[in-house]
Structures are given as C-alpha cells and as structure tokens.
Image (cartoon, rainbow, N blue to C red; front, side, top):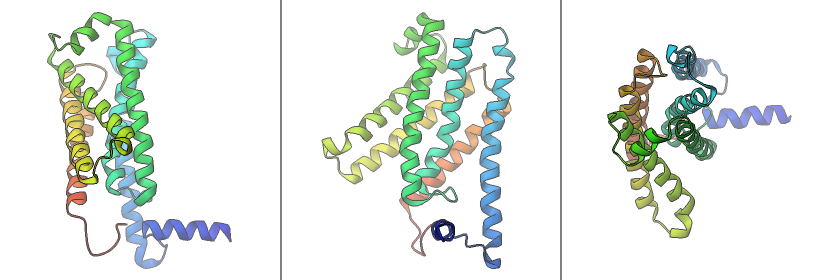
Length: 225
C-alpha cells in the first residue's frame, strides 16, 4: 500500500501516471534527463582527462575540479527554481535548489582556496582586480555575486525583504553569476575541454532564459508537470 501511495504522489506531482496517454510524456521526461546528464557528465569526464592536469599536483587538481563541479551544478539551479526538472517540481525542487546552492558556494570556496594554496599571488591579484589575465576578473565577479546571493538567502527573513525585491535581486545576481562564470570558463585555456564547456555554457544560458520566462509569465492553464 505504501508503495502505491508513494507512486501516486510522484505521479501527481510529475503528471506521469503510467497510462498509455502519458507514455509520450514519460519518454520526453526520460530524454530530458538524459540530455542534461549527458551534457553535465561529458564536461566532467573531459576535464578528468585534460592534459593540463597531467603535471599538476593533487591540490590544484582538486581545486580545478571543484570549479568544474560548481559550473555543472549551476546548470540545475534555474531548472530547479522554475520546476522544469521532471519529478522535481514544486516544493521538492525549491528545497533541492537551496541545498544545491549551498553546495555551489562550498565548491567555489574549495576552488579559490585550492588555487590560493598553489598560487597565492595570482589569487590575491585576482581578488584585487589587478590580474593580467582577464578571465580572473570575471570569475571574481561571479564569485562575489554568488556570495551576495547566499547572504541574502540566509538573511532574507531577518532583513524582512519583500518577496518582489528578493526575487528581482535573486534574478539579477543569478544573471551576473551565470554570465561571469561563462565568460570566465570560455576565456580560460585550462582544465575544461573546449567543445564540452561551450555546450555546457550554451545549455546554461538556455535553461536560465527559459526559467526566467517561465517565472515571469507563469502558465495559467494548469500546474506545471
């Protein structure tokens, strides 16, 4: 009985009840997840075999992968917020969105900390915006926007921020985070493989725009599946 109730709750949330008329919807959900995971894991696997890591130490490798994982997680954030991931809509998606945001902050901290250990002078120059490499500036801008989002999220109730202000601020900061991150990784000739990071960046832009449109103009025909 519990199994049937659990299955029923999942179907009610996702709209996939297993009936013949919903087989196409189930296939589309499967294909959607497959495409997202393929893009994500392709970038991770390609980075794992990067020739730039062959002569690097373990701390630098860990720091580099923390950055790659952070960008991979970033791909899911707009979809979780807008309820665009099949099976993870509504409250469940928003809750995972918050947890993923925390992991994303930790990934960025690990990325910066590892780079600071291996090359402290470069990190200091980047934080002071005096680095000779342009990609550093964009990475730092995205980092501070991410930290600002985390602080606003934690302090939102204490600061008594109105929902409309919070939503606008969150969207603007998200755009800065995504834009800065994409420019950062595209300019860096390093761990991430060229074609996989272009694909990941393009997909990230598309899912963000779709989420932005969906949240700004929600459908009135019924609940999102």
